Length: 155
Image (cartoon, rainbow, N blue to C red; front, side, top):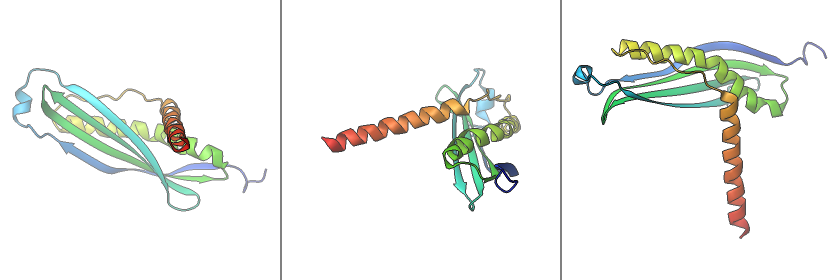
């Protein structure tokens, strides 16, 4: 295999594409004694910039509530530009949905923690995420939905 045919995967740029911090019930929320209940949502997506360069965006949303009140809401979009060349087509989706988010996640975790601290709250430390499991769960859901659609149209 020549050097031109060898698979290439490289990080071109890592950056915060979007960051939002909201503390809608300040300053009263800082007088609350209860610990907030934290919910975390995460999604990722990739888009081609050209034949061999892709932007992958990992969006993490952290919402903290005390009772019915929102203590804070932080959303961070951690992005990366990745160069991918000579990778088989069947490996592209796993690479962009598992490999790239694995690279982006530590940066997103740091952005979230820093934003929460700057908003006046104790840091939120995101636990490690298994993007491989999430990828295969999403594939199963898509296949089940496609099978359901096929069954409906066959009847």
